[in-house]
Image (cartoon, rainbow, N blue to C red):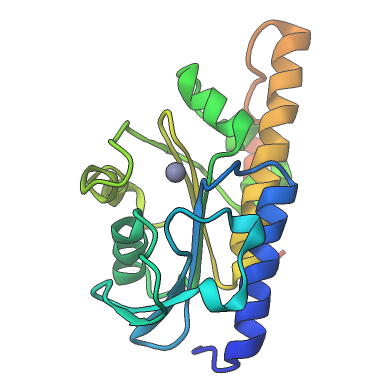
Length: 216
Ligand SMILES: [Zn+2]
């Protein structure tokens, strides 16, 4: 599916950037967002601007090599990370990179995100690995995420933030919102019990697998 309605896509793009800011998932000029516009072109956020204030004219059109086709600003410094995902995942149409406080805190504490504790997270997103630390805005970032791209819809970046994929911009955003919410729940469970909660039982996982096969 190639999205052709550029105005509608840009409006959705700006809405997602505003939601990221309002939900506290990014601060200042943090984060970056992109989506496929056609087989060869992407929309991506510019570098150095607060995402909550973006206007339609700020969004850049770039090709699959990262060259600016339309727009006067510099593309996001993490453009190489976005390009790597699109090259490896033809099913991904949108990417959201953010700095969600609770998910990022988990990586600082060295605690893996336990998606298998919460049935709806497991069913809709699945496992969420943490890519090892990489210097932001450098070639190290795509290298660090490369081993995790196949078969994951979300990753955490150690000491940095999150990366979520979607078939639409809103899906990539909602996956992030759901994960940050789940991270709060896991944290509260940890506070109450003084240890991380147990994963779902094998029997419960099997039932979820059946639901997943039925497309639920
Ligand atoms: Zn970042």
